[in-house]
Length: 390
Image 1 (cartoon, rainbow, N blue to C red):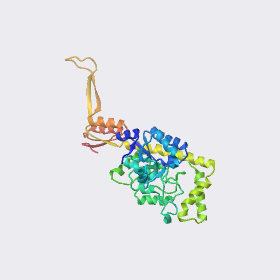
Image 2 (cartoon, rainbow, N blue to C red):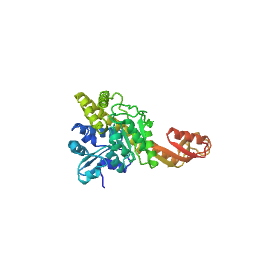
Image 3 (cartoon, rainbow, N blue to C red):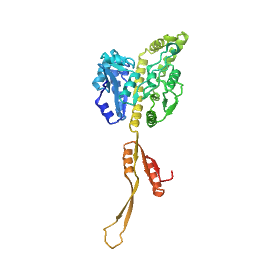
Image 4 (spheres, helix red, strand yellow):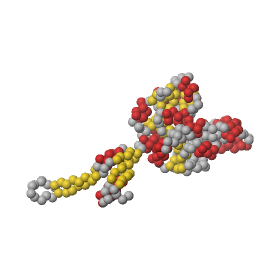
């Protein structure tokens, strides 16, 4: 089937520029109009400000759109919950019927991957629901993470879910769960869930390298990066409402298929004040914007992947007279040394674009060879070489 790409996304794909996929359910079902439109535009602006191209994904009139114009975003925002909420399972139905739909995490992952996009930013993922041992209520997000090779940046999972079982399920699916500058998996409204991640990552470059290794190994699973809520933005009052709902559920001995409906209804009841609703909306917006910033930096780092240069490095020697040259006389002059060589020059030019460069070359077993290695090291270029003691 054909995808309809926005002009900016199409140009980015052709130029191998950094692209960040964004879901559209947060626009149609996450908040009311016009707050949803304003938030969508703000998130896209964050992506652009960090050097990426935003690709909000949605279905309009039975057509998959990878990237939306401002007018299309406004159309989606006004449609709101009249849009079909699309997961993987109902994508073919919505397309066949010519309907408009917003994409969930699962559907956005799949469509982004089909479009050639490697990084996807969202607020939080679904997970294993409490009581799933009876209901088998497991989010399709986890299934998709196990079979779509894309990196998902999120604020973790809400503690209304069974986070230990969620992480166990992801482990079974072969999904690396990483914590961005944290050892603790974030729980959306708060930075820590009490559950450890598989590994902590410290920078966008490290995340990009993991994504690249996943691709080079030919693995078909996704990678999950949990980004804690920014310091000072924790919503303890909302987390408190969730904790109270869980206690109430235990006191009432609610189990099985009644767990999720009860928790959702009870949390909504406990957070029915204007201040709490405003706090939750504010946090949702802060989370997605913060995730978009980190996710874009990862996408930029991934787009800059390694450049391999094979060629020579040389030390050019220039000798010049200090004054007017006269035949048959001794002249005062000087000798200048300058680094050159086609391989070295290309590698240096590539490094200036921000690329991670590797130079394969030959250097001499002498002082000049040692200085050549030191010179390239100062430029941040990794050398693979022969002829000199390594």
